[in-house]
Image 1 (cartoon, rainbow, N blue to C red):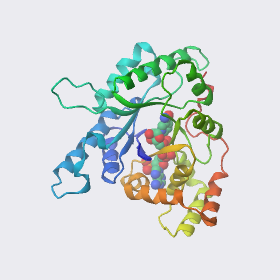
Image 2: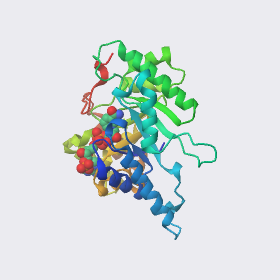
Image 3: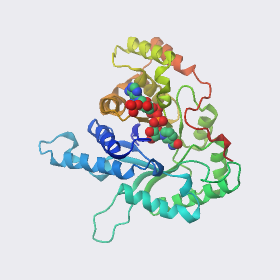
Image 4: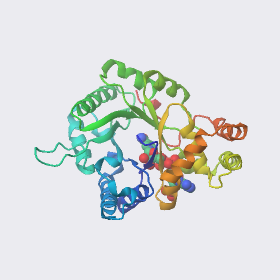
Amino acid sequence: MPRLGLGTFKIRGEDATRSTLDALRSGCRHIDTASCYRNEEEVRLGIKIWRSEAAADADGREGNEANDDDVFITSKLAPNEMGETRVHAALDGVYERLGRGIRSSPGEPRVPPLDLALVHWPGMARTPPDSPANRTARAETWRALEDALAARTVRAIGVSNYTRTHLLEMRDYARVIPAVNQVEFHPRCQQRELRRTCEALGVGIVAYSPLGCGELLKDPRVSRAAELLAEASGDTAVTPARALIAWSLRQTGIVASIVKSSNGDRVAHNVGREGYKRAAALAEASGTAVDAAFRELDGMDDGTHFCWDPTVVR
Ligand SMILES: NC(=O)c1ccc[n+]([C@@H]2O[C@H](COP(=O)([O-])OP(=O)(O)OC[C@H]3O[C@@H](n4cnc5c(N)ncnc54)[C@H](OP(=O)(O)O)[C@@H]3O)[C@@H](O)[C@H]2O)c1
């Protein structure tokens, strides 16, 4: 899984196609979508346009070897798609909209699997958070994902917004351990206990909202850390966004970070090939001045969720 991905929550219609294209043109190869984002077809179109651009480039540009497997796509099953009666049709819908995972007939070209399918949320739609029906729905949905993995229509399966309790409960019903748990993760929401549990179980963490939904970009502590990192590294392109992305890549257990932007320049800055190289270099840097800059961010944890808090779901 590429360590930085474009997040597409709240990017709809043509904007989703354009942002996907911006990401791919800038060298990003990881797109995060979900059934409930209602943009899977537009993401697919962005990938298709990029692929035909690359194929048409007769001059040997790097991208012209693009094939169906070049882009890592994650999608998620929504709360209203959970449970035995809905999950199979829901998965087929994801495959159809993304053009992945569809079983091809003999003689037809092979359709690559979906790279990663997640259970989006631990609770089922229109179900009280404390209802035991949520647990049943989680188990049934997971069983369907395990079957998809066995059938090779998906390459990997995981969960999202699962707490420590939801993960430990999986020992009772799961045959396959989730590859990842995609959760809110940034300096104000460091999820220390959950990270320890994930590490013990061998579950990677994918960080979502690493910029705190944009809110952290206004925080003076983040601006200060970015200035310190710029001074320490001599890289004048250390913006608050890059400092936060580098910080997330630096944390133990974080296998990837998903950043949203619908602005082409910011997409390239955040998740493009060059942006990734610079953020990764910062994440791996050491020395007193760099450590002091990252300590500014380490010290911000106050458990704030800018998105939603799943601990209410039983
Ligand atoms: N599994 C889940 O339940 C879940 C929940 C939330 C999010 N996610 C995933 O994670 C992705 C990212 O999370 P997110 O969208 O909540 O928030 P985020 O990536 O933390 O922040 C996005 C915000 O920051 C702004 N921004 C981005 N780059 C910037 C830059 N370089 N300079 C200034 N502003 C910048 C964006 O505005 P512009 O668009 O105007 O640039 C947007 O308002 C989502 O899109 C989604 O794929 C998953």
